[in-house]
Every structure is written in C-alpha cells, then in structure tokens.
Image: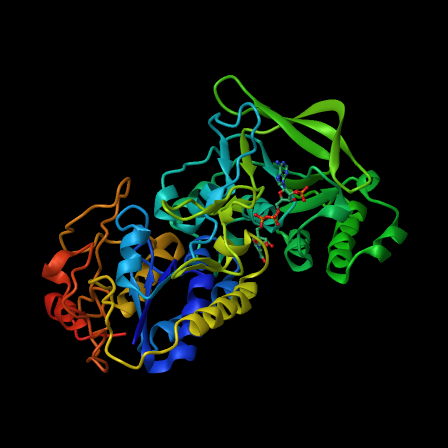
Length: 481
Ligand code: NAP
C-alpha cells in the first residue's frame, strides 16, 4: 500500500489528494499536512470574506477528507519541524502544494515604512490568518493606495470601501470588521503601471465596484483607448474594459468614498516622515511589446496606507530546487525529483482560478500513479504519527470564520516533543476531544484509520507513533477519517 504526503491543505492539495484517492482506492493512504492547525489554505485565508460562494468549494474538500483514506495533520511546518529528507523516508512520495503565500517585493525606497503592507498580510489580517492577526493596518488617514491591477487589488479596494452592513453574510473576522467600520479612508486609488487593456481583473469582480453602498468607482476617460480597439480583446477582457468604460461615464452620485483607477502609473517611492504619507509614481507609456516604460514625469498620490497587490511567490523549503524567476519550485511537469512533486501555485506560479488547480492536481497524480504502481501490500511507510480529527478541524472553522464571534484557534492539548522554529503553534496533532461542545463530533468510529507500524515519527517519537487507534484513545475520541 502506498503512503503519500500532500504538503498544504489548500485547493491544490485537496484536488491532488482527491485524484490520488481515486487512482489508488484502498491501496493508498494520503496525509494532508499543513503548518496551520486548520485546513483549506487559500480558501480560508486568501479568498475574500464577502465571496462566500467561492469559499463553499471547501465542502467538496470535506468529502475528500472524509473518504476514509485521507488524514489531516495540522501544526506541522515542513522545512522547520520536519525536513523534506525526513518526509521522503516516511512516505512513498511527497507532493508540495504549499501555494504562494509570500508577497513579492516592490523594490522601491520607502517600502519598509509603517503603513506599507503586502496583500498577503492585509488579506490574511481580514481573513483571520494567525500570522497577521496583529497587523493593525493604519486606517486613520483619509487616503489609501492599492498597487496592482489584478483581482487581489480589487478585493482589497472593495474591502476597504464596504460599509459594516455590506459585510452581512461574510465571514470577515471581528477585529477587521471593527477596524474597517471605524476607518477614515475615503479615497482609495488603484494604481496600475499599464493601461485598461492590460488589466488582470476579471469582469465579475470588477463589476462589484459599481454596486457599493458608500463608494463609487472612477476612471479617467482619457486613460481609455478608443472603443473600437476593444474588439481585439478576448471576450473576458472586453467585458472588464466595458465596466471601466461604465465607471468613466458614471455621474458622481455623491457617495462619501471614491475608488479611483490611476493607470499608466509606476510606483517609484513611498515617502513620509516616520510612516507612509504618499506614493510617488512615474507616468508611463506602453512600448511596442505592451510593457510599461517611464516617461520621466512623476507625481504623488496621498496615502497613509499602501497595500501592494503585485503577486505572490512560493516560500523556499530547504533541499528543494527553486525557480527564482518564477517564484516557485523548479519542476518539470510537477516532477521535482525522485519521489518529490509539486502542484498548484507551487508548481505554476500564482495564476488562474481555484478550479485551475483541479486538472493540475489530477495531472500530477496521474504522473505519480504511473511512477508508483499500487503495491497491494501492507503499508510500509508509516508517515507521521499524530493526526487531528477532521471534524475537529472543520468545527474550528466555525470558530475562526464567523465574523465578530471569531477568535484565534485553540492551542493543541497535547504537549509537543519538538517545536517548529519561529512558530507559535506546536508541530503536533490535535486529536478529537469527542464532544460536540469542545469541538469534537462524538461519532463512533467507522474506520480503523491508518495501519501505522512501528516506525518512529520524526515529530512525535515512538511514544505517539502508534497509529490512529492510540491517538483515539489518548484523546478519548472515537472519531476517524
Ligand atoms: P495578478 O493577477 O498577477 O496581478 C498582479 C498585478 O500586479 C498586475 O496588474 C501587475 O501588472 C502588477 N504588478 C506586478 N509587479 C508590479 C510592480 N512592480 N509594480 C506595479 N505593479 C506591478 O496577481 P493577483 O492580483 O495577486 O492575483 C493572483 C491570482 O489570484 C490571479 O490568478 C487572480 O485572478 C486570482 N484571484 C482571483 C480572485 C477571484 O476570482 N475573485 C480574487 C483574488 C485573486 P503587470 O500586468 O504590468 O505585470
């Protein structure tokens, strides 16, 4: 029987686990390992809280997790608490689905000033990511600048512009909701270094800016190319530009907040006494290849908050070859090396929709299935020793994703044997407590879980490396997945 480790519990990780479970059936066990104690990655911490229909895809991931051959192991930082080399010894294959959670740098003077934040931090803050709960972005000034012309810039601008009432039905965390409600920001400038025909914004997301209660979107008509030039665009881009034309034609409705698109503006510096006060940009033009070139003309955009939404990169992991230019793992069709694969943004870079990760995960699972045929014998590679009940992990979602009622995840109840470097969480499992009140589901076990043999786990040592039944008895739980 094959044993696989999928590192990362976002969309790429789950689609890959789903594909492996289908390809191998009962001949494989799949451990989904995450450095956070809760699953879903990008779905939980990246997708905007007012986009609940997108977040609903996690229900599909629940089905994968409850399928009987998949476990979730949270609080384990791969590369810190356990190395890739160690994992290779414990699994037949390791699949990196770590996404691209790190901000790309602007590389301009003033980037380190207080008030300048990357989108990973800002989005993590309003989505309840534990690393960014204390970000406390300055919302006391009258103006903010959002750098980038992609969907993340749209998310950030929209979240900054919405009223408290407009967050009804969202799962924005309470600290962000209160801070945004008290925000003084009235002008949000979305800064793009190229023009309306070069935006990476999709029509549905762009159209949302036209229906905000307290804010109106504004585009300078002079920035738009002649209407007949739109015919050369693909249909999606044409729809997006259509929305920009609507914003340009729109009459001022007297709403208190304004979202201004500033095209052909390349950030060159952020200035201020002891915190960000203004973004300095250089006017650009497009060259023959459609790239932006500076014209030498500069001007300032007032901004005490600057959010840079210019794309993400995959964090490095010791021992894994890296593609510096692409900000992702060096790979050939998802293959990094012997027994080591990558999927999703860690494979392709940060592009595409959540659904793009499905064919991606299935493709790499097929490559793995060809390289590692089912053995049909007892599980020989034990994997890591402790686990966390899926129902507990999901119920923690109810705690941390319910807006004003949210609070940070509970610490795990078991004493760790080894701590992740620079981590506030312990690299051990979080077994089910067995009662609904405490976050457990209290269901009787329907499956025996992993047939873990005597191999010691690098995280928990021989004491806890006794498989699912021991974890169950330690926690008093009768749950399984
Ligand atoms: P993105 O789509 O790649 O957009 C990045 C933007 O940053 C581009 O406009 C780019 O301009 C600009 N940029 C890059 N470097 C810059 C620099 N040094 N100075 C100024 N501007 C710079 O990235 P994203 O917005 O982070 O989105 C990532 C992925 O997630 C995308 O596939 C996106 O569609 C997806 N997403 C989807 C949704 C949704 O569907 N609701 C929401 C959020 C994110 P150039 O074009 O000139 O390089």
